[in-house]
Amino acid sequence: MNGRASDLRSISYGGGVQSTALLVLAAQGRIDFPLFLMANVGDDSENPGTLRYVEEYARPFAAEHGIELAVLDRVKRDGTVETLWGRLTREGSRSLPIPVRMSNGAPGQRSCTADFKIKVIGKELKRRGATEATPATIGIGISVDEIHRANNRRTEPHEVITYPLLDLGLRRTDCARIIRDAGLPVPPKSSCFFCPFHRPETWHDQRRDEPELFEKSCQLEELLNERRDELGKDHVYLTRFNRPLRQAIPEGVDLLPMFDEADGACDSGYCFT
Ligand code: SF4
Image (cartoon, rainbow, N blue to C red; front, side, top):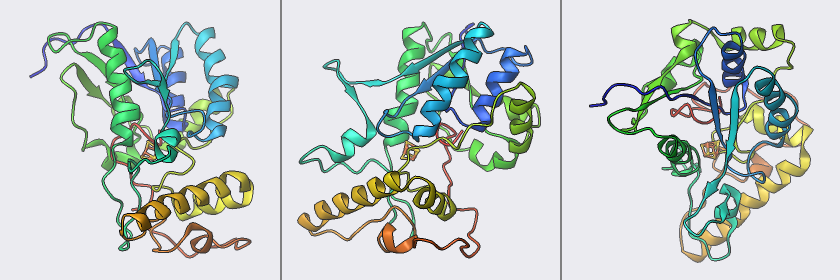
């Protein structure tokens, strides 16, 4: 059981549409969150557009409105920064922390969200004084249209989770309007650029608009499968189509068949917000 909530109130800031709307709502005094914590999976891992948005728009906006926006790296025990890309590509690594797709298309177990987001924010809240007896309140940017993502989160003992957009009945489209009305551009989707939860449309956009990122995603998939070959294991993929990304997302095809909503599913609310 959690005790009385402390005065420590923070948003888990992902740099995407929903949590940027929360930043505007906090600036307007419509929600009470003076602190925004962003767990950075790595400058080599996060969508570069998200990182640019945070520097160009979110940081100055937060500062102007007296809100603290802190970007947190994952720092290892030896004091060095670890990125998710670094963990995946480290020589000799057998670690497979991202939700790669198995031959049936289902995502595998992942530890990336816990290690690079949930624990990083949890550690910072502890550092700022959250305890089991006086837990911090942490607001997650899940909107009404994604309410199914709000029910699967294990709560850390020193945190109480809340969903301010659900309380206000706001949808993703409302979030975009709130951001625009505040004079800010709507941010791009936040997530690791190689995330296997991407919808096929997102991969398609990446191939067309950011070919160098798409190439890196393909190379990552190839590296993971070279290692799987050495271990005598089945191949895994970044899409659910049971074939390499380069083939699954063909170049120059503009319209793809309809895809179901299960793609892009991430139940924690720490990613894609
Ligand atoms: S965006 Fe995807 S790959 Fe990145 S931490 Fe979240 S689930 Fe893992």
